[in-house]
Image (cartoon, rainbow, N blue to C red; front, side):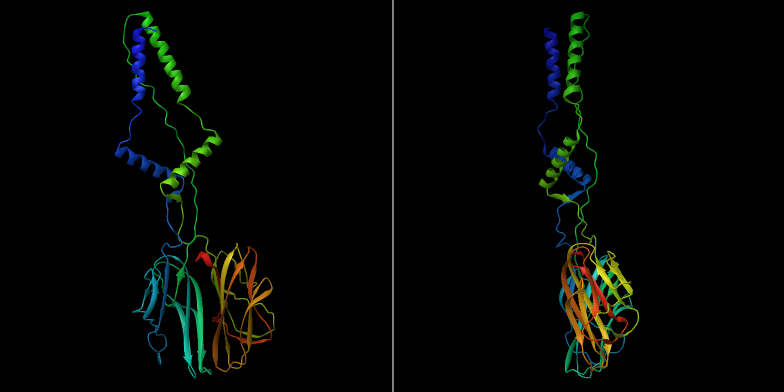
Length: 381
C-alpha cells in the first residue's frame, strides 16, 4: 500500500474517532431526557405510591346534644377528627367530592327513651338511604346506616367517606431503532495516477463493506426481548415503573334497596333488593338477590332493615349457603327502628353472598330506602 493510501486510511480512521466523545453535562441531561421519553413510550412513569396517594376520608361527630330539630335540617358535625382531602365542611355539615369515584358513607346516632329521629343520607338534595327510630322504648339505643354511591367531582353528600385506589398497569408498544454510523468522510485527491485511484477505490470498497457488515444489524425476537428488558431495567434505575392509575381501577361495589314492604316471610327466604343504585363490576343480581364475587379478594358487606311495633325479624348474612352473621329484633316495642349488620369476608371468584330470613317468620320489613344491602371489595374503593 502506497504512502498516499496510508495517509487516506489514517484520515478515515480519524473521522471515525470523532464519533467517540466525552459526555458533557448538557449531553448527559439530553441522554436522561431521552431515556425518560423511551420509558414513557413503553408505558412507564415516575414511581408513585397509590396506597398513600390522594386518600380522601373524614370522620366527625357532634359537639353537643340536639333537641327538637326541624324536618329537613342539615346536621353539622362540628368536631372533625379526620379530613383527608378537605372534602368535609363542618360549618355546613356537607361533604363535597374532591374527585370522581365510588364513596362509602356511614353514620350513627343515639337517642333516648321516647325519642323519634328520622335520618336521610342525601346526595345533591336527593335522598338515597333512610334510618330511623320512632317512639323509642329503650333508655338509650344506637341506630346506624350506610351508603355506597358513585360521585362526580363537586357532588355534595352529608356523611362519612373513604376512597381506596388500585393499581393499573398499562404496557404500550413502542418502536425500537438503531443508530447506523454514517460512512466517515474521506478526502479525495484528484491525482492523474492509475495506482492511486485504484488504491482509493479499494479502500472505499473495504470501508463500505465494513460499515455494511458491522454497523447495520437486524433484531431477532430474542434480541428484541433482551432490548425491552434492558430498557425496563434502565427505567427502573432512574426511578420509573409501569404506569399506574390511582383513580380506583376495577372497582367492585354495589348498593340496592327494597322496592316494597315484605310481610310474613318464611325462614330461609332470600331477600331480593330490586332497586339497584350502584353495581360496579356487575356482581349483584337483583333478580336473585345474590352477589357473586367477580374476583378473589376481601369484601365488606353491610345491610339495614326497618320493622314496626311488635315486629320480629331475624336476618342472616350467607356465604355459599352458610350463615356467618345474624342480626335481629324480637317483639319490637318502638313504633319503628332501624337495625344494621356488617360482614367482612375473604371470597374466591364465584362465591355467592346474600341476605335471608332465619329462625322464625319475619313479620314485617319496611321497603324503600329504609332496607338495603351493599358491599364492596375492600381494596377497590
